[in-house]
Length: 352
Ligand SMILES: NC(=O)c1ccc[n+]([C@@H]2O[C@H](COP(=O)([O-])OP(=O)(O)OC[C@H]3O[C@@H](n4cnc5c(N)ncnc54)[C@H](O)[C@@H]3O)[C@@H](O)[C@H]2O)c1
Image (tube, rainbow, N blue to C red; front, side, top):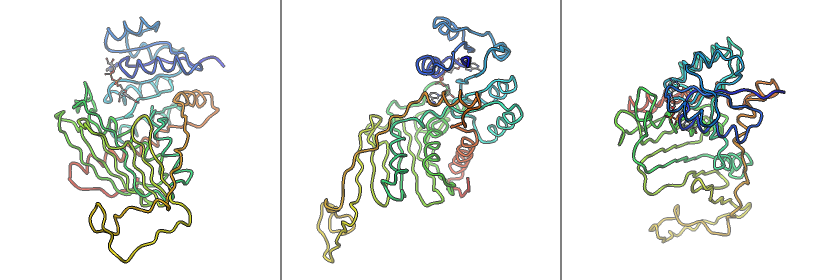
């Protein structure tokens, strides 16, 4: 089959990344052209051997283009996605797919009308740290998982560029929140039954920049996410507790530990109070070493290019879409409720 032809709308940081990464890793796709509102961006694209379009309309009128990738600020996603679908293009849209669930529902209606493929670039489903956690949970290494902490902590102080402006769909919840929530909802195939959010605006007035958000799954797991911008000593990227083990992943290098309870190594309680560094306590006294085993972390080697290879397979009618708009819709519904929780200062019950 001939290569699919791709054009990218928005040739900034992420548009450039799509062009380069697809060229390097996805031979099934020819990255052909780019449209951007900035002339400097078009010049940079030409320097990389790309065709440039002078308007979005011109790009969408090019019948040789099969796939349009949207990598512009968040507030423009909906309109460009709808125009591209109506022009008969398959579409990959950067995250957050839209600013809220209602906007995404509009896109889904047009997707259904046109029958074209529409997906969201939730590339962090292919992150190694996330895959290790998912493999440990799915392989039952931790027993029943009942507490998860998922944290990303930067230290550069504020949200950069358009991310600092509400009208562009800026703010941390729409930026990183959408990734961490998508991961959470991939880990647990269960309804979300409540959400809460503390969306602080500490350094970038007008948008949330340091946030803690919480969801509870129907099966009982309590899931906390933190995203911050002025953290000088990082907490672990992941801390996951289950009935049979605890997993910690320290940072993006994926160093970490998985401690598992030994089968049949029962822990004996003493009626006497134990004097520990924590003071007099039985509950917080250290667990005897003979009841635990350290085991290697699951060996995961995810390949991001599988995202685009799947898009090609779906367009050719050979595969089922991995990142579905319906999954993103659940994430956007949770995000809508998180903004409500922050506004009202109280957690929200739901069934999403
Ligand atoms: N998946 C990820 O890991 C990831 C990482 C970074 C950014 N993103 C997403 O990618 C998108 C772009 O972010 P970025 O960091 O590349 O921003 P950026 O500011 O670096 O680039 C945006 C580009 O879009 C252009 N642009 C703005 N409005 C336009 C319009 N109406 N039509 C055409 N071009 C337009 C700008 O001139 C700029 O070149 C955002 O939605 C962001 O959330 C995703």
